[in-house]
Image (cartoon, rainbow, N blue to C red; front, side):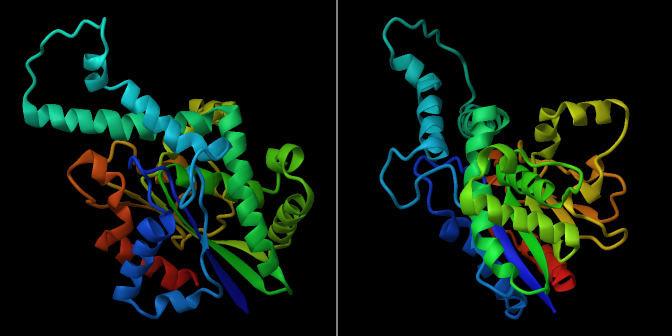
Length: 317
């Protein structure tokens, strides 16, 4: 018997006061899927695992570590804005002819998609930011998945990720399923029951009773993030590719990974071409919106995304 576990990992939204991702994002996709196929969610054996990180949802500030990221991004974006520069005495503010429509679009992109979205990327690319985010997300997943591994039944992990969450989920799969690597999270950061639970995941993956079920990546930034590794830089410089087996993908023909991207989303990229062999991967071009700011966030309730997710889950559960 096979048990299927559904995992959601969000990125950071450009909202000044971010809503709880469970209702604002995760359940929006689940509702869209259920509206098209009411039976599909019954294929999963437990309640979905809703990862939360990067902000204090439903709690007062200031939080700690990664929970301050959203608030810090909002502050930096506001302080670095053209409007704020105009207000500050001593600045030189020469008049400039700007077409209102184009100016509005550029400002929206600059101070939401780039200022905040790119700030997420820089934070996770920095050693201390990566350490804090992984400590939070990996710990959540280790705590919630390990108790579901009782018995010898095969367990499949199914990921639904967005934006920076794509890279975090990809890194987690690499840490669990890559037999040749020793996770720095286990070696340096995990302690007590979290370490034991994570090692249980790795052990079951090595035994073949914990498997990669499927992966949904919306607004993937993997082409940017994998350059953090000199090993990958050397690989790509030689014209070579990532090995799907390293993240647990062993299928040679059946699609198990779908990357969704809108060409108007400045932080979303097709990513299948990074892997070889890549028959198990599929890039899905969708239209989430013509405004680059909303194009980055509106995958969660897009009808085409829901259709493709249903097709994936029907085959892989």
